[in-house]
Length: 507
Image: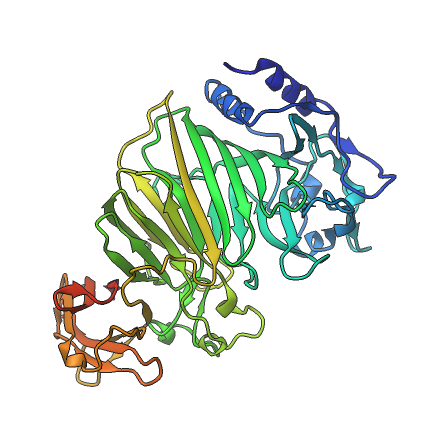
């Protein structure tokens, strides 16, 4: 049954003035308590899906028109963090509105069966004298959340996750730095009619018990086509683990849905250095898409920065997992003292139940600047979500240096490189890791090399003295082909020795 008293309380809070003009004591100011139960978020999503979409109000234009440099002149004072000075094991910061964030979120603190709204207050921020005078009104609110915990030193609360912008959020394993993002939901990504970006509009933060390592965050998603109720149980560490429960309610029939969408950046590496005049040998947040499909096959697809938009779909039934990985882990792989790409996390998605038939989608968008995210990957179910119905799903997100599962996995691809041959064609080299079960005599290893167009040699296998593992090299003669799909794998005694390497070549 819909808890109408809860919804009415929320509506009253949303309609009431949300701004606090001054702050007498440190900390985030809280409003009056209302009753709360986690099922209320599901009720609220269901109720909103039965009504027409109503966009949130925009913040004042002066805030929207802040330049990037001006926005950097305002920041949260961590002394005002939620639960600062208490025995709670977590801290929560908030971000100011403005610039890329023209609409406010509503955030509540949950203790027991009570939820109190966090009220907007300019007093929780510090600014420089270069920050402009901007109007304060009831449309203002915070634009996002940052989570902190004692990760390595007692008394030092380090950040490990951020929720900010549409339904985007980011996490890092302890010792990593921020890189790729995840989203609550993707709709019509790469569609010629244009993408729809759902928003997380409300958050509820459960106060963690003393000594608890994890925190629970509830979120309400809203969009013209659907609503959603989300629950995140977040455990910092290496890797950072997020257990996600979600239920999507369709306002309109959803024909192109992206479940557990990931967004990243790939500009170049050993496959396309000739296109960029750069002192660095590689620039990317992640270098490959890894898939463990329902048939037990492990696939490695190196990422590309194509000259034209590329969309790939890897059909599957009940996938075991997929993710965007960063396998280049040495400073010398990037030679970048500022971006530190070798410390960017990978992100692995593990379904919590059978997801049925569908495909892992990979979208690669051309880019010539590293500031643009140009890689998207997600699970696209074959079945539509019909208008007036809902779909529930669970999954786990592991953020870290090497978050994919290791047990019984075949040899991983460490690196892929390509270049022209003087006599014509292109040579491709694939380096695999070493392992005790790799035979010393590599002549016992079978190689499988296939191409959908042109001609490929059968390839040769040699041991790479740098990695200790085998290297497979083959030559591709394109002929009249404009593009080709490659498939390569090492096999031993008829069984998979390595991951399946897939790549799309285009002129």
